[in-house]
Structures are given as structure tokens and as C-alpha cells.
Length: 489
Image (spheres, rainbow, N blue to C red):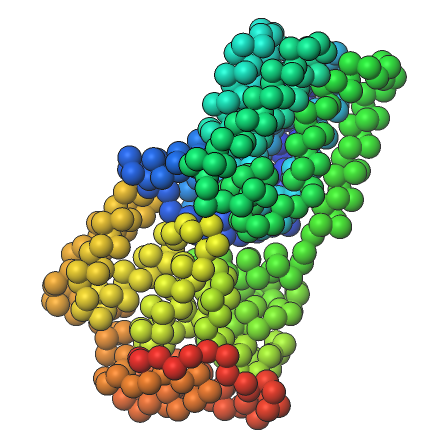
């Protein structure tokens, strides 16, 4: 394949990736960003570097933070996948098989339709493949051995893509050195600084997948394909039509994306991000085309109905009883998000705080969240717990996109006049509960009634009370089982 066609095909791939993500996975980039909080501190860097794959994880989180602007995040992902493709092409000895350099990137695109896949895996693969390209130009068993040892610490087990590539190119007894070193580096790492991690996690990658004890087979397949493709292109006969291979790859990519597409999950993430951006009309337009098929989606849609002034249209949309208005506390990293927003606007500040805190602490890879840390800081300011709010703002001050917001919020610390002059804070302080009491989810209608009786301006509490009462009539006894806990409000 000539150089011009190579550049055109790579550019077309980047554009296709961008359009695919923007059109079929709206909100996916922002969802990944809200589940981490990248900090420009030395301690944060050392924390990442203290485990295997730390450098790849640090670079990935640095890139992911730009998904605060979703379109920018998707552009960066398209660039990364194109860099991955071009890097693989650099490891080929025969340019006529350039089309095969798209195989692993296409597989990676399909794999990343899983919301639990971390960008760290892609970054680690890119770094490993760049080492392969360097080895093709400057082979040497000594520096390959050093790269294997350091690479396991810096980018994790993805370094073995490079090790396998080097072994396939050497084809002599020198490869025994790399094989022995690979085994030793894993064993020594596990027995020293990775003692708290199970063998399965150490071998498969600590931060490649959000669920630490789960290793998808597709992840291993992508790594093997990436390592073996260069050797395969060396033994295959010269292709007659490279364009035909590209067409076949794009058809395969389309089929793979189609079968991996999880519509309900995509919709939930899209709703969540539109709630975050207060795009109420966007939520309703999306729901009119595809009705939410879960309680979580219904919470977002019903909130949008009230916020857009279309509360009378509640019967038009699929409902899931009272749980479709406000969910009981579910300790995972997505279920509480919309309900926390509902509580915040109702004036149930302590419950909004509780849901936000539980959402952040439920991140299974022990990250923090910029979105939820902002909400916790707001709740603590409203509650007058300024020392706690200040700690959150101090942390956010070390981030890129939350720094300006954190500096602005400092003017409310210990400043009752500033709070009283702010339209949001002053309103929420006027409608929140006047006295503490035990929170009990099955009696949410009573709590909503108390909110409205204390301040008749709280029309949201009145609407939610009416909706709760109406939807409760259609629930069975089993649907009313309470799964939360009593809590001081």
C-alpha cells in the first residue's frame, strides 16, 4: 500500500472512530471523567507509580480529565486509537500488509464499548508497541531485557507484547533470557510491592479493567493479536487487493460494534451526563425516541419533566413506580447519581450529600470523583460545615477543570452574606428541613409533604409528592420492599 493511501486510510479511521463514539456513545467520555479526579500533585504521581502499570495509568488519567469537555475527550480517543494503529504499522517489515495494522485498533474500539474498560490498557499497549517499533530498527537483547523489567513496573503486563515481539524476531537461544526475566519480574513484583494484589490481577493488569478481579478474555486476545501481527505479515503472501482487506475490516468492525452495543447502558450514561449538564429538553427528546427501560433512567426522565415545566406529561413515559422518582440508596458508582440531583433540588441536602458520598466511595478502583466532590462541597457549605467543605475545595484546587470552580466557592466559606445573596444557596437554605429526623425511604411521601408544608414555594416537593402518591397506588407489596437504611436527615 502506497504512502498516500496509508495516510488516507488512517485519517478515515480516526474520523470513523470519532463519529462512532459521538453518535452511538454520547456521554461515555464524560462518564469516564467523572469517575476519576486527576490531581497535579507529587503525592498523586507517587501513588500511581507505586503499583505495576503506574505510568500508563497516570498518562491515561491525564488524558481522561480532558473528557470534562466530552467532544474533546472523544477526539483524543480517536487520536490515541490512530496512534495505536500507526505504531503497529511501524512494526511491519512489509508495507503491503498495512491494512492489517487496523485489526487490533478495531478490536480495541469494540472492547471499549464496555464501560469498565480503562484507558490505561490502550495507553499501555501503545507504549509497548512503540518499543516494538524501536526494536525493529535497533535490535538488542540487553536493552530488551532492561525494557522488560522496567516496563512491567511502568506500564504493567502489556510490556509482554514487546517481549513476545522481540522473542519472535530473535529466533535463537537469546530469547530464553527474556522468558526467564519475564517470569522473574512478575514473581518478584508479586512478592514485594504487590503483595496485596492476587496473582490473577498482577498478571492481567491492575488498572486495565475497572473491576479488579475480572479479566475479560477479549483483553488477552487483543494483546496476543498485537504481538503476533508483525510476525504474521512476514509469512503471508503478497495481497492482491489491500483495499479489499480494508473493506472487510470495516465490515467486521461494524458487526463487532453492533453485537457489543448495549442500548440500555448507553441510554443510562447519556441520561446521567445530560442531568449533569442540565440538558432537560435533551433528555426528554431522547426518551421520546427510546423509552427508559430501568428505574435509573426513569429517575432522570422524571426529573427532566419537572425541570422543563412538563410535569403533566408524566403518564407519557414508562414508569417504574415510586422507585422511578427517587431510588433507595444503592451503593454503586452510577445508581445514586440522578437521585442525588433530585434530593439537591428538593432541598434534602443531607440525602444528596449521602448519595454523592456513597457514589464516590463505591468506585471499585478506589478513585475519587470531581463531580461528586463538588456536590459534597456544596452540601457542606449549605450545612455550615465550612472546615469540611474547605478540605474538598483544597483537593479540587489541584485539578485542571475544577480549580476555577473551587476558587469561586471559597467566597462562601464562613460568609453568610455571600450565601444569602446567591440565588441557589439562598433558595435551598430556605426550603431545606428545619429540624433533623430519621430518614426512612418507604415514607418518602411524608417527607416530601413536610418539605412543602415548611415552605409553600417548594413547588418541586409538591409535584414529587403528588407523583409519588399516584405511582404508589400501582405498586405491589413486593415492589415496596425497602432496601435502604434509616439515616439521620
